[in-house]
Length: 544
Image 1 (spheres, one colour):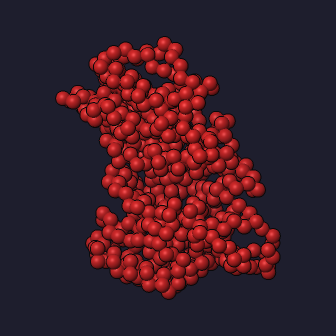
Image 2 (tube, helix red, strand yellow):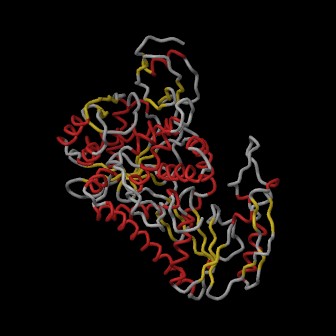
Image 3 (cartoon, rainbow, N blue to C red):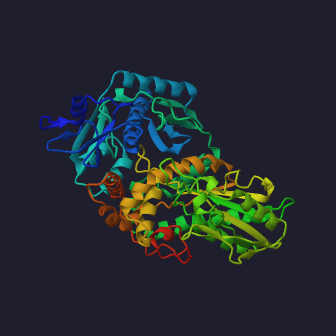
């Protein structure tokens, strides 16, 4: 269809008269994400998006966060709102006031009611484009040092900021045209703050079901406490520290904190191994590119230092033969399905090992798709412990016949440790996706385009087979480093720039490129060879 030059995407959407199942919230224009107020002056390919698309969900969530910020500011003038991280299928938020009193149930209700008033008024989100120096001045006048530090180090000539009524804020992506688009949301008291709830991406007409995640919440809180101690609450803080020449110290402290955590886990395993009910198996799991392999190797070293001999036992070798692998409806193999493993044989061999027997374990030939026996034999001695790494390691169905007291379970992920600013968090999935893009490219396995194309299926598998069991862990470990994106930028920029503009994956590569430009780049020369980052950027002293 043809439209007048300068028509907005909203005008174009209404002009097409499309009958879509869910409300449109944004669009991709020539494979680049844009808000519905974006104006078109030349021929373009336009794909309209709702919140079942990850890009559309980001637009919806950012807009909801702005409404929350305005409502909190209106109800408690002079207060500060911090949107910390995703948890329990929502976003954990803290309000800090002059009286330092935690927000109450009644006060959360007041904020919720004010949010609904703003939405009922259908207040418009207005975008303003100015020189970055002007944006810095605007935010400095309002005391938003988090945004000042971020923008001062962003290298951008121009900056967009948004207004909602008389409230000013900054977001690193597009917003909805107006607050009235926000039909499904929730806000409730949560720990010492609030939980902002969002729609379910598979069923946008209803809220995402809340999931209790006390252990995950504690690991986030632990990182938050360390960030406050180190004075690195957001990317602006990290950038300023790097520009002052403190990269070496930041790297050393971050690595030391992770090593301290690994030592603590090893010592706890040691204690439980010498208890009345001795632990004999360490189960390690985590989503893609969480650093499971490096963690396993570093934990093994610390266990050796405790006088315990670790023995690796891979779930990958218990894949069923390729012909018996479950399939998706489209006929492709579902390798992440737990039924892709021969659980009966796995548990049989595991029980024999625990009984002190010698077992010949299989080796899976990924070239032929066949399980083979080649004389690899294992036997546990008194000071030996089995270490099993795999995506199903914490799934009770994998080791259902093994008593729980014999198992020590570890969940590892890259739970991103810094925020862009007080209202813009960094999704943990972006952390892992960047790791995967760099690793796949360096290994010659996949191009950035191919990795991005596979990512939604990877995430879907994690939602089904990994995340439901993470709270079963005895210990959780965060493999993210606060200077990680600064290091990854040097590796990822050129790789992401190789994605062609005429393919669907360009949208994600463009978003990630824009995102990593917020970080002051730093060389990886001081990253230790045993670091988690080395698993992805290369140069590790471990053999993978």
